[in-house]
Length: 307
Image (cartoon, rainbow, N blue to C red; front, side, top):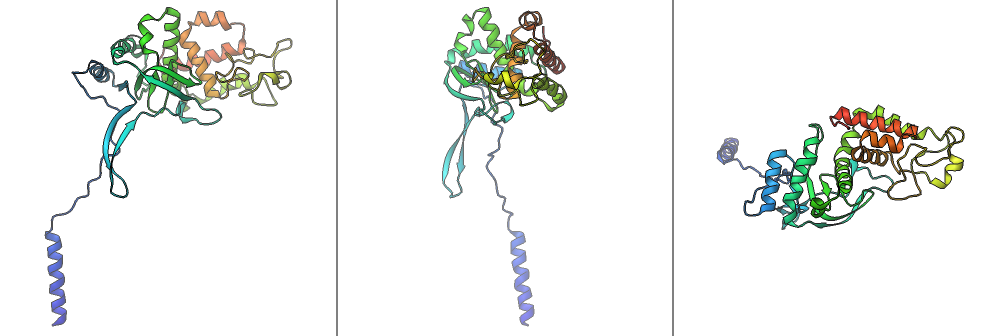
């Protein structure tokens, strides 16, 4: 009798549980896609950014805080999360040596945004091949970066573009350098793709071949006389003779600290000079011309036509 009673109690419990509505745990969408631009027709800058996003697929901002969300911490306390663009590292996240970084920046005026967008639509977007990914663009005014100056910087999920208020009044020379810096920031990751590893190895080795003692990258110029042993007889060791366009931007006494800095310097030079101009400037340096040929070959394979 006791056994039957236990069975009946168990069946009643199972029935009650099965009849209860299933509870569903809902998790906040903490992993939402933040890289979007929402329209605000009442704000001309935001509306221009929205139209640019709809036309190109590239989110464009003039503030590095791109959204907010109510969240709950592990103690059950509610707080507001602010999503910010990340530009604390560059070029695929390489952090060896002295990595590039943004030292400081200031927001641009909203009134400068439409003209900056026109510049991008007329001068940058038309030359971007389909395979070159631009996660987002952040327009700023005063930009100070370690390694890449004040015009453009490639961060983790955005490309910072500085000096936007000066675009309409730029001279032809400054305009060319400005455009080249932006293209360098956009293209570097695409050029450093693993599919070009063999070509890039040849690029690096063109400078490394001049020493059997030490790596020619991150090499102090005062050591050239006793570390460089592969130059032709009578050729004085110099940055150009070793196949470098110059010293590392962060230290005028050293060759480029890393191979990707070397690539970046050649990219910017390729974007700011025609082939004929580059030849006139560096034609007497065999290794520079060989490395330039490799970089232009990669760019043209990506889909960018070097003039």
